[in-house]
Amino acid sequence: MKIAVAALSKGTNSQIADNAGRAPYYTIFGEQGEYLELMSNPFHIGGGGAGFGVAKMLADKGVSIVVAGKLGANMKAALISRGLEFQERKGVAQEVALKILKE
Image (cartoon, rainbow, N blue to C red; front, top):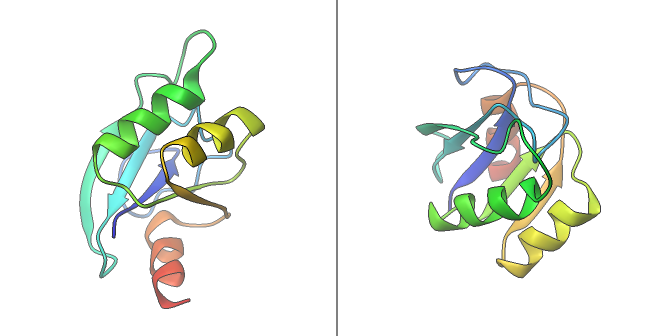
């Protein structure tokens, strides 16, 4: 299982970004909560369709769960269409990923 956390900055101690589609980064964690990868979000700035683009990008990376402060209706629909779970959380990226894995 991989968890992608919308992040405001680089690093595992980043705060979780509020807007899933426009988050500057996604930090990917593995099934033990270990850091795997940092991805820049190419949909961070731009026109519509960010949610669908982000959902495809994360699904292509093998992500199972997407975490952000807030997920809009279009983002949720895009994630569901790709078979991804999602959670709305606040806090520090790696700490939240570890909590999710323990639940």
